[in-house]
Image (tube, rainbow, N blue to C red):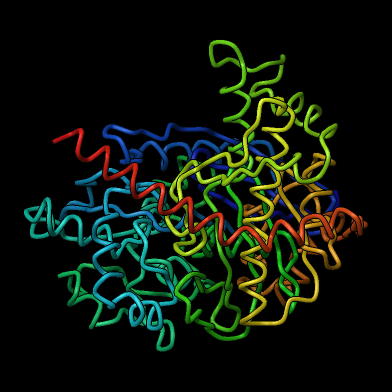
Length: 513
């Protein structure tokens, strides 16, 4: 009998599903298990989840992954999770609040107040996180204003990753990557900032200790029984989903940006030390102590085309047999010329994650005429998303050199998305596999943490040799020229739309009163 096969399991707890994947150390095989869970909206603008439902899904997916690995030795579990979440726990470690997710916008007023007061600039300089409703900093201010009894009663304030690690290991800790996304860590000193904690009214004793992302914990006996592994199995603290995703895409060379596009999107690059955007737009979060991910995320990506599939179909149903009608609609859009015959879409259906990216503008079609067809509406949506991401790249390039961009994510299975995105970027562009895989990034970080890979890049290549390969995308010069002209006009259009949005908000407020 030959040596027992060894695997590392990456557990990526995402916004609507957990993906657990066992990667063989020789890169020859993997087993994947996925479990979904709902995103709840009990009040308009509140986007929450039950933390225990997410933990149960993570344990179940991990158990299925272990069972599917046919008796292989699991050298480590490594965890990634969605960032920016907040949970209040009591003294028995029971959630007192739901998980307030990235998309929860209840703290919009708190974020606006911090920007209007001028405090946001210093907060961003100190923490690397834009002042935005997504950040736990703003969520805690909301609790202090609206549910102050919770601020007094809560023994702990934690993120999603922290709670998952607690349920896996019995230890309540956080790690530098997730902590750096709270808006409360001094990224230059790598500790909770006393000044920020004083601002939000939370003490350091209410927050978990901050460990390196490579820190090794141990699987508890109870969690071991649940997933089918021995107690004491190494559990690597891991990083947040964004940094894990860029690692999983093998886009960790300096000057190379990784652009992922699914329902949402992000464009990021890796630098050696914290790099803070003076314009207060881009985030800077840790992958490891000496690898920091800087970039911008957008809330409106492939979801914009899915929305079009519902909105353009009779009775809100997809126009084809596809789940959302997107492939059929993209086929219509491919027949439309670049620039959509003068139609422009500002794709801000959801409040954007990059605070200055949309200047508060609402979603809008501009230049609509009766000759415009459903294909025009969809092509303008694709172009609007790509132009928005192109703006993120341009701003990032002002801070650090960007020589090329690597595309990942389900949207780029479409030739139209690939062609438009490459033309908007108008620089060397490659595809790098089908997914920006946070589970692979978690597993690679885990492999490095337990000493079985010499560096992060080699860890990814070792686990996924095929995924580390890239293919260049040819940039159409005529298409690139068309989008250069459109990009030059876009800031003025966004400014005008932002003012129109303010007028509409004022009118709506007047009607309510």
